[in-house]
Length: 176
Image 1 (cartoon, rainbow, N blue to C red):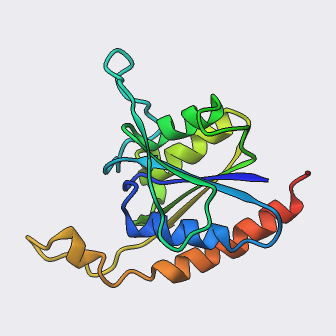
Image 2: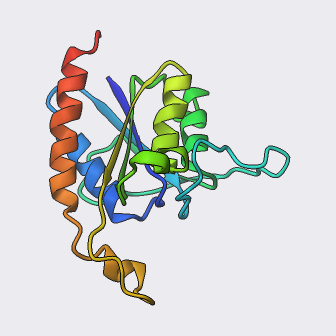
């Protein structure tokens, strides 16, 4: 089974790296490929970018301590990463897209704007199952507080462990 891991926070984000490592720990014979934006694209929803301005570039990236088959950085939003995957830019077709880990709960109206969810929706629109993983940010209320301070206490590994168990159940039930 081929699994694409992406996010909307960029190729260097902690959430993406922890999630990719968790997907590499799935039981079974799974090929994990990471393709994520080169920079932050939170709030991009399922956008691909302005079509007349898109000049996408794809570069080789690295995820530490992860046995992913490949990792790519894309100059564009997460939905564009998924679209490239659907068009074969990262090899044969994918069976599943796993997007996240997003710092911030994507619930309620936030789902309309989330690039994390936009990636999963773009996968689904192309006939590929998609999973979006998010977690709430607590303690983010001080005026002038830096984002890095707000997410310092995130439980990335806990979210990744939950995602791994959920995705394992999903892939175990998917037809080969």
